[in-house]
Amino acid sequence: MHDIEPFFRWRDNYIAAEDSKSPVYGTQHDEFYYTNAIYNYYIHPQWDGFGSSTLYLKILFADYDKHYAIIELIGEWNDCIHNDIMILRREITDLMQKEGLFQFILICENVLNYHAGDDNDYYEEWLDEIRDQEGWVAIINPLEHVAMEMSNYGVTQYVHILRDAPWRDYKPGALLKWTKNQIFSPKFLPVG
Image 1 (cartoon, rainbow, N blue to C red):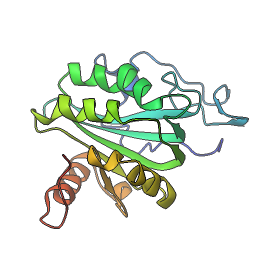
Image 2 (image 1 turned 45 degrees about the horizontal axis):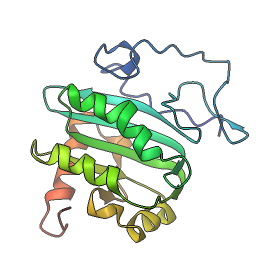
Image 3 (image 1 turned 90 degrees about the horizontal axis):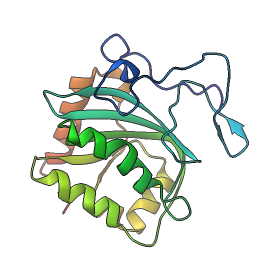
């Protein structure tokens, strides 16, 4: 896992650590000193911690005029034991919403497991807070068993799960357009 880097092709357009509105503003990364680990596996030092012991992220892009953010995640998403959705909400997305971001694209192909909690209150709260601003949450390219677990536990009532997205081929604006086309196409049932 130590050699899986966050996606870096958009760094010419956006660096979250240099964005004063970002929850990770001012974060400094060491390219060679590995300190963060998921269980006993070190991860690349470019990933940002946000309070979870098993899930890390990288804010790849934020556009305050178009009200969207793209966040890449790595690790184990554990709502059962660690309540990762609560931590993600309070430490990251709540702060981003205060800055006017309401459309969230979560790249989850490096989320290796998902463990559901007892309820989906934080997912429901998230959708309730952003719905009036035409907001939504899209989970892009989760592993099949992660998508099935989220679906089995009703998370898909509040988020859109989109598979087979060629997101690395796009620039941020094109990924936003692709995501909206998937969410709002007639074949895709809306959340809520």
